[in-house]
Amino acid sequence: MAENDERVCWICYGAQAEFPNMRWVSPCRCRGSMQYVHEACLLRWAEEKELSARVEPLRCPQCNTRLMIAENRSFLVVLGDIYLDAMGELTPVALIGSLGILLWAGLASYGALAYSCTTGISIRQLVQKHDPIVLVAVLPLLPCSLIATRILARVSLEITVDTRGTWRLNVRNSDTLAVEQAGIDDEYAAEHAPGEEPDELGPEDQGDWEDDWEDLDDDELEPFVANEEDPHLANTQVQHPVPYARLIMGSLLLPFVASGLGNALFGSVTRKTFDRTMLGGIVYHGVRWVLGLCYQQQKLSSQRQRRVIQYSQS
Image (tube, rainbow, N blue to C red; front, side, top):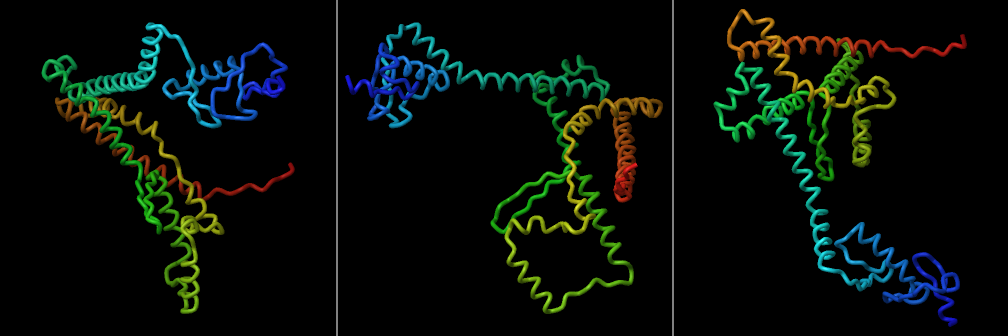
């Protein structure tokens, strides 16, 4: 009886004196204070574990012994557990597949609508003229190609390899690269005016520079592009995020905008809907490129003229 008084449940930490009517069990190889546990606590803990991971067998968290629990299950319970386990494994896959089918069907519908707007052929004629399976397989490629072309035209992929042989892929905005290059070129032109030659390193300076460069680690070489003491070069390191949402929406609206401009500007020039759409797309991209270039130049000029206002008590 003295031995039972020392028993402590390793789940609820209740002692023998606190719960005299509860049944104690020793389900694993643990000894000492971890040997005994309340049967009700262990069954509740086992039920919680089975709900979180039904496939994994129950094991003691200390000695890793598999816990054996006797259960008189009927055939219906066994069949129901097998069904729930199978559904738990297959439901995420089926959900992802269903969402993929819905997305593909939406892309196919958009492709048919864009093709009809671009060529002037109705969707009914398109379905009657071509095999539906071919249309379902090909039409979603139209919006995908528009989005991929637009994004690749606006981003720059930089692949670098450090001294350790690690490959790094950086995705940067092309507008940011253009602004940075323009700022660096103007800074270089301001420092090195016509008729002035840059300072040359002497033999002793060149030797010291090479020794310092070899002592730098890879982590110290990465930020070496910018000089923190130069505020202009520090500002050029700001990277603007790639506007993926705007690029995707612009890509999806491009066929309809080109068709509208083509019908409005070249309706009397040609009768072919496709030709009018192509001419409208050329005009749209040309005007957009000119306006974007002017915006970038004025934006850069405005940033150079920014000044911090001194604080005034009044």
